[in-house]
Length: 269
Ligand code: BTN
Image (tube, rainbow, N blue to C red):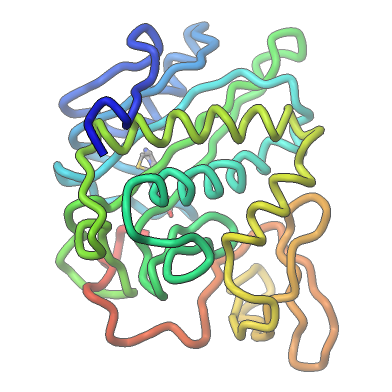
């Protein structure tokens, strides 16, 4: 693939920073100052990268740290769906770049972890702010993708794209991602097209029946993956066969390999 094939966001709609605390933070500051987007904020390095559940995202140079600010007229209850929209788009962007195939080794884990095998290669953090119903909701879709490395201190399994034959610079990855997110945001259509996003997500995720556990407010729940509901919530069949629905929680695969390439840093994800 030639560099021209990667595409890039419109130069007026992206901001490239050498270093920032968090691209999500910068995009939200701009939203609160009146910027409506769409605007991509990309940084070579983050000093306080944010992950889900108030964890930090260790962000050394060479990987992708990017956030897309949009203003949406979707109902606030639907804004969380952007996380699934971004997950599907990220899988498609990676597929465009190399040998990995969606739904095989490259896949999604609810709500939006990007896995290769059972190791995490990327994560997504959506943050939003209602700025008044006339203006719509400012939503920041933050994506971290391990392109060239993972943090070296170990906890959970993690990996990076170059280890699997997908060699991309952050700029190339952004070009691919921007194109796929644009297409999937159109499909989502402020929530009206979520059924197609849900289908797309399921096609790029692990199989129904896969054993997993969820760490939710009520503790650890073990069961089997049973799909997504019409709004994107996770459905698990617990060990008694009862279906339980989760809108929040940390999901672990019961069959996660202990021999993944590298491991995830304790405070990164
Ligand atoms: C997760 O915990 O899996 C989500 C990680 C999201 C990290 C990305 S990196 C770019 C953007 N800026 C941030 O501070 N976080 C997100």
